[in-house]
Length: 103
Image (tube, helix red, strand yellow):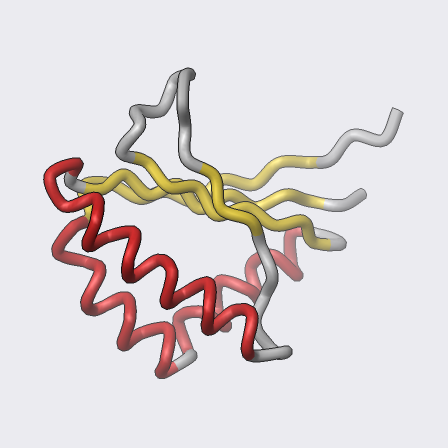
């Protein structure tokens, strides 16, 4: 059964422009490097999460593959450099795993 991993990042709304500019750099890195996990980015319009939230989401064959993607991010120097710039804007972050039901 496949798994969807979501990285839910709430940022300081006063710094949305700066946060999103850095997120574009993450997206560019993801697009340019074939070894990067590929995901999609979502921003709530209406729902439980406030509008100053960015969600990165990707599907993996299993939870182990999803966890390896997290390890990849933590071990990649380019990712860590961008993250260091983006961290001051974070207010909360969490990682969620969902089973993709095939009924």
